[in-house]
Length: 244
Length: 297
Image (cartoon, rainbow over all chains, first blue to last red):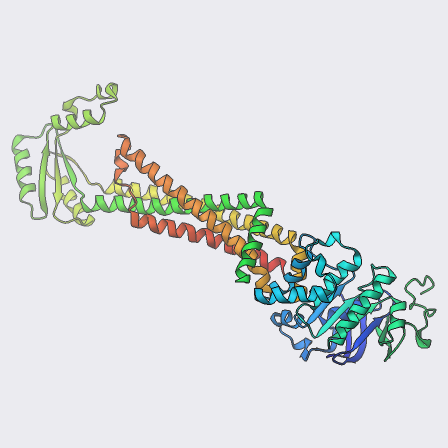
């Protein structure tokens, strides 16, 4: 479903955000992308959605070679990828329902499809009672569920989540992860970039660890930090003041 | 159907959010295209008037006041029997004075300076053909005859009027180009502001895979709508101007000369179409420019 072949991304000729990463994610997998801030997690996600172009190497997503993808085809690729962000990116002047419906509207889905899909997805994320609320009337966890609903309403093959629990308390984070887990069980490939040690350790899913743009660990049923890159190692812990 | 509703809703929201800039853009378009219409109408009106004069043109042979009666008769016979001449009409000094006093009826102090003897008698000559060259050659021929003071054709006047209208049209065209440029820039800016106001929506649209053309469309539509409304207002203004000017010409005796400067209704239809299309074009250019510059994130 997602394949990186020796992928390197250099921003403005300076920093190597991603350096020689090779990996393969199969259909239906649930993958945690872990590593400290600036380790290249977000860049990897942005490369998958063509928001950034690789400097070297090849990426295949949903059967498409991204380096050979015409720019006018990018939107069609993105229809197969749902994206969830730390800051939700909801539209404040639209209700919950309208926010989710918007995602279908702007890719030209007919109205009858919108009228059946949106309530179904709101039920899946547990917000069917709040569909008339505006984002600022919801808690952080609820807002993030709206953004997951929006990302998943078109039933994409892949769901990318960039630190989706970054702004949420531990209990809410857990609820959200189990929602992503349920989505994963429908066959959707989920890639979640996170700092959240508790969740990663509890879920016991595949863990891909990055450090300074390099892939340092790829484990099936892994944990946030293992013996190879313990939290004490320089540059791994997010708040490690001793890192060089 | 959902698309049409989507586009209608988005475009309307944009226009409402951005009312002052929208107004400025629409009014500039209106004035700009009104000038386009004005230039076009001036062209049509002068063309129509000049056609008429050139078609039914006559020339006038002014006679020396001291002309012999025999010379007068000989000249009259020559004019009457000339193969190129259709008919002639004689105006004596008194008749000329009568005409002048009619024209100067409201300026008696000016009229007092004119005496019938000071006005030359004349033959008005209507040639068979309306070709300007022929009229010129006839005029030249009769200028040589004894007792003839001068021969006046409409040529000089026609040329002067044509020159005047051409330069008038040039100025109007220049102004309309300047204003159209300003309109393009105003629409460009108003679309840019609209896009900035909607940057979150645009970000989400890109995220969920809306095509660029889909994202651009409401903005292009908005720009075109500005242009269309401006074009329609401009066309209405041009129509009002036409009515006002033609009314002015027909009511005023001083401007009676301009009465033949009219625009036919067919020509006015063309003016309206050109005006509205010019508006839409200006809107399209401005918004396409903005959409292509500010969308490639």
